[in-house]
Amino acid sequence: ETGVTQTPRHLVMGMTNKKSLKCEQHLGHNAMYWYKQSAKKPLELMFVYSLEERVENNSVPSRFSPECPNSSHLFLHLHTLQPEDSALYLCASSQEGATGELFFGEGSRLTVL
Amino acid sequence: DAKTTQPPSMDCAEGRAANLPCNHSTISGNEYVYWYRQIHSQGPQYIIHGLKNNETNEMASLIITEDRKSSTLILPHATLRDTAVYYCIVMKSGSWGKFQFGAGTQVVVTP
Image (cartoon, rainbow over all chains, first blue to last red; front, top):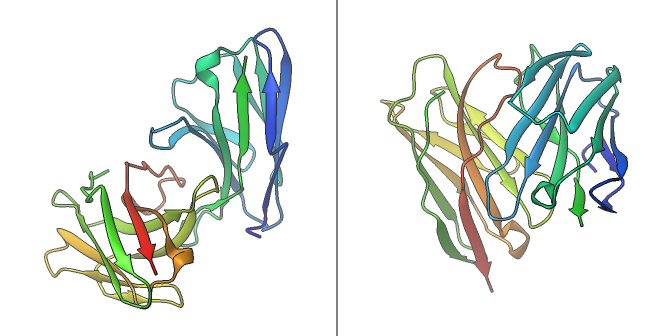
């Protein structure tokens, strides 16, 4: 148990669907992140939120839309995805000003048909 | 941030020490060395980090060479549960957790 909870753990969606991934952290951290891990590829940083403000968007397509309503919750809204978007989506949190290590959730395994 | 080089894979016998090397020859003075591991289909787990001194915690030890161009992660008594991909990452402190994960080293601990 890392203190970062992701739901759902598994999601199958069609290309025309709209779905959302949810992340909640119980660590009192002030920064949250979305990473993507495709098969046989390294983890890729997608978005960074610090104090609920987006501070990084690594050229992610607009079909991925993040939302951070407060410091404990992070969402990734998905719409009109492509099969190549199938991947493990990992949420993480950290406390800025501390030693900087990330605490990851277990991930949401997404399959786009 | 400096890039790192790790062997793609290594085997280790259960109960023995596992020594995982990492080269980071272009590291700069304000960059830390972090180690994470990822057990299959789980999120990465923080192990340890250091700047220039050797570090030890309940999971592992980190040995950084004096010129800081390489480091070694030591798992003192490897168990089957230590089978994972191990990532060595170099990053400036305060970089908003923007870790650049590479391919890492696949460590397989065998009985």
